[in-house]
Every structure is written in C-alpha cells, then in structure tokens.
Image (cartoon, rainbow, N blue to C red; front, side, top):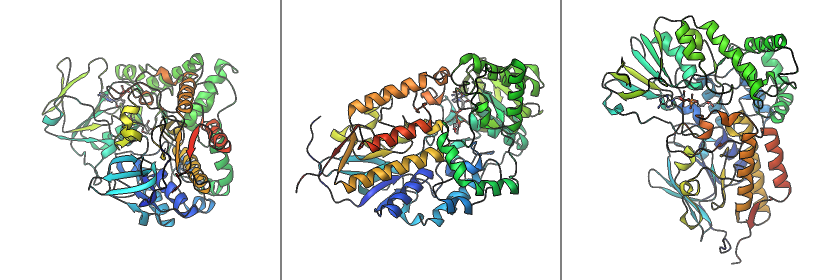
Length: 546
Ligand code: NA7
C-alpha cells in the first residue's frame, strides 16, 4: 500500500516499553543506558517481575534451572547473585528481579500500577500514542511490547461461577497475602505445569483436595534441592561457558541434547538411559535422545517409560489408570516437572476426578457439579487453567496500526509476524517474544536477551541512518508464517491437539501453532542474518523533508 513518507515527530519518549518483567527491564537498560534514549516502561503491576509478580500460587517455581534462569549479558551481574536452589522459587525470583532493577537503577523509569488500555499509531505524526487506565496519553517513536507470553489468565466460563458461595482464585492472579487452605475442602481445576506444582502443596494444607483432570499429563521429578557450594562456585566460574551453551542449544537450556537416536541403543540400554534421566530429573529428560520430538515411535518409548512410572508410584490402580491415560506424545504439550505430584494421590485427603469422561456441568453455590449429577462440595476452587497464551497479552493492549487497523482484526485468523518481532501494518512496533519467535519453546531469559539486543541494535541502526519508519514487507511476513508452520510440522508438537501452543485451550481462538519450533540457535542465526543484510524483509523509510 502507498503511504506518505513519515515525519520525524516530537514525541514524549523515544520508546515506550509495556511490561517490567525480564524483557521490559532489559530493554529499558539497553535503550536508556547503552543508546542514551529517553525510554519509559509502563507496568500494570505494583512492582517488577512480570509473570512472577502475579503467579504467587502455592508451589510456584520456575522449571528452568537457576543458573540459567537469569540475565547473562553482564558477567558482573551474573556473578554477584547467588541462587539457593536448583530451581528458583517465585519469592526468590522476585528478590532477584528487584535486585537487578535496583542494581541497574531501572525503577526511576518505570511507571508502576499503570495499565495500558490502548495503543494507536498516528501515521501523520509517525508516533505511537499510548493511553493508560487513568486516561493519560503518552507518545513515543517506538512502541515495544514486553508483556510476556503467559500473562492473560484464562478463567473458563463455567456456568454458575458467580453463584459459588466459597472463594475462588486463578493461579496467575494469586492474592499477595496468600490463601489459607487450613481445614478447607479445595477443588483444583487443571493439571498443567502450574496445577502439577500446586497439588502437593495444597494437599499438605487442605482438609481435602479434589483434582479435576481434563487431560492427563506426563511429569518428571524436578529433584529440586539446595545448591551445593561447589555448584555455585562452578556456575560463577563458568559464566561464559554456560552462556555459550544456552545460546547454542535449540531450547536455551544449559544442557546438550544427546546426539543419539532412540534406535541407536538396545531396549535395555534405552531403559537404563531413561532411568538415569528420571533420577537426574527436570526438563533434561527430553534431551535423552535427539529424536524424541521428531519421531513418534521414538517418543512412544519415552511415553511408555513415563506411564509405567505413574502406575508404579500411584497405589490405587483406578487413579493410576486415569493419571496414565495420556493422549498426546511426551513433550508435545509443555512437559511439567514436579515435586511429589503423583505421590500426592496416595494421600487419604486427595481425590482425582476425570472430567474428560464426566465433564464439569456447572458451579453451584456449594461446589462443582458434573454431568452425571455428582456434586463435589467445596470451600475453595483453584483455577490452574492456564492463559490466553502469546496473543492474549498483545490483543489486550488494543493496538491499532496504520489506517486504524486493530491488531485483533489483522490477526483474526491467527497471529502473523515477521520473526515474531514485527507485524506488517504496525510500523515501529516491536514485540518481544512475540508469536512466531521461539519464546515459550525456549528458556525465556535466553530468548528475551536475544530479542531485546536485536531490537536495540535495530533502533541504533535506524537512528544512525536517519530512518523514521520500519515495518515488515507483507511478503516477508507471508514467508515467515509459512516457515513457522513448516517448522512446527517437522515436529510432533502439533499432535497435542488441545495445547495452548495452538491456542486450543481458549474457546474460539484460531488454531495456529504460535511459537517458532525451529530452535533458538537457528532462529538467532536467522535474525542476525536479516540484520546483516540491512534488515532484509523490512521496509525502512527516511523522514519526509521538512
Ligand atoms: P496449562 O498448561 O494451559 O494448563 C491448564 C490446565 O487447565 C490443563 O490441564 C487444562 O486441561 C485445564 N483446563 C483448562 N480449562 C479447563 C476447563 N474448562 N475444564 C477443565 N480443565 C481445564 O496452564 P499452566 O498454568 O499449567 O501452564 C502454563 C505455562 O506456564 C506452562 O506451560 C509453563 O510454561 C509455565 P486441557 O489440557 O486443556 O484439557
């Protein structure tokens, strides 16, 4: 489409960044402290931390290992912080994020308790106008969304919720003061990564816990525990090597995927490898063989091993059968890791209810009623029901681009981006970890650092070359969307038909595989190449002469 050349407008800020989690904090640091720009972060929460500010549910802990779930761009910053456990808990992550924000003096440029309600691109002025819930309007040349992939809580529309006489909570909007489960009959809906973390902790406190399971899930023991002094010293000394590993692996984790096929070994050897991986625990179970996510038959061997473990751990055969009745390949949905999840079903105060076979019909004043009329009396309902992932946080910003085009309309059939970084029709908008980038298939701080650095380098290039407007060519978007699709279909990931990677957990959401499954290392190379070729696939426009 033809449009007039952009003007270099006078904005309140060079850049407005929405969100103060890992991505917003690092983007602010890069733009302000390295490029000398006037940047402002708008954050809905009362503090930094992003997803960890909101997700305070019992057992909330990151599944990435501590020594890689942090910023690695600064050697000093990396070495000054000491993690206490193998996986960082929510409270410790919040201490870390606040420490970083103070150490880099970020908070003075973050407006907290500031919810963005609309973002409008003004083509005539070539500016973004950002409106907040208080009616304030701010303008900026660049708008950068740092809203995370999992920040829009999905509370299913189950009839009767408003009539419930007890208390209910979504795990992603957990009260800061905590929830007292003592003596309570608790119902938990959802058995994803969050639900699997919450179950053992809630069961230990509640009078009774009923877990409503729609889709049975695999889980591998996390084997969390305090970090030994030797490990902490090793991590400090190996900052560079750890960084190189996380940047060279497809998923940004600090472990190497074994360079062997599940078929390179005998059945007995395969079992021994799985047993060792189970004992070691954590997401590295996926790294046992290189073809687990590519070859269904290879995946079946891992799936069979994990299902056998469930039957071994859970004493009641009926409960074990329901928990092991898993309908998708291992890791085709985000694979949870746990601390005594399956063991918790051996407690007298825990019941598993299969709501695939007998769905929830409604919530009543007393509790939850199933289709067959069974009533479960409850005092508290916990919704561990996940998020309107990836697109939800972006659409909630009510972004309108060129010609007043709403992002929701541009993405009516699913998200379309170039590199997950920009959207055609939305000039000068950058989306950190946007759909079409590896994002949730990668250890988040690793892909966040890459995106924030790419964006900062890009803005430096635009400024250095007097370019006022940047947006992707529609053809480049077309090619990238096709590539994202092709990369997903080269794996088993789309085979989990109800996964949030596909948007299938939110009724009415278009089914499109949203993250880039081609691997972070490969993606990093593609982005670097695009930049090296003068931002190939983007249209760069100089300002109009005054
Ligand atoms: P997930 O992984 O989306 O899990 C949500 C769970 O809630 C899952 O078991 C869903 O079953 C279940 N769910 C959702 N809606 C319903 C209704 N209406 N009835 C019954 N059960 C329902 O979210 P998490 O918070 O666990 O994890 C999100 C990510 O956060 C995680 O992957 C990590 O990256 C961190 P379903 O499978 O849809 O049948």
